[in-house]
Length: 152
Image 1 (cartoon, rainbow, N blue to C red):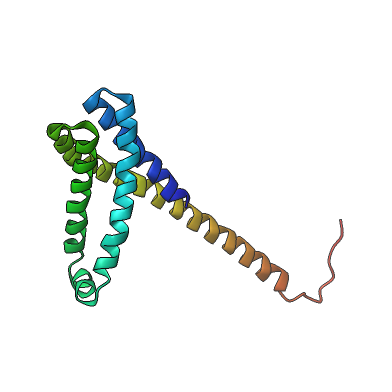
Image 2 (image 1 turned 90 degrees about the vertical axis):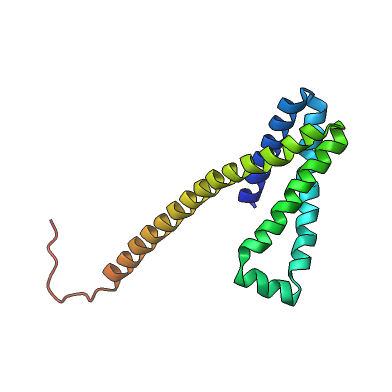
C-alpha cells in the first residue's frame, strides 16, 4: 500500500506541475491533477474487465504489449479529454496527453527502482538475521562435551 500511495503522490505531482505550467492557473492545474488520475483508475478497472475475456486474456498472455498498448491509448485519451474539457484548449489537451504519460513513465521507472532496492535490502537483512538465528541454534544445539570446563 505504501508503494501505491507514493506513486499516487508522484503521479498527482507530475500532473499538477505540468497542468500548471501549461495553463498558468493553479485551480485548473489542481482540477486536472485530481481528475485525470481518478478517471484513469476507473478506465483501468474496466480495461482489466474487458481483457479478462478468454480470447483477449490468451492474447495478453501471448503478447502483453498489445494489452499495454491498448491501455496507453486509453491513458492518452483520458489525459486529452480531461484537460480539454477543463481548459477548452485542444493544444493544451494534446500537450498534456503526450507529455504527462511520458513523464510518469520515467517517474515510474525510478520509483520502481527505489522500491526494488528497498525490497533487496529487506531480503538481505532478513537472510542475514535468519543466518545469525540459525547459527545461534546450531551453537546451542551442539553436543556438550564431558570435558571439565575451566573457570577463571
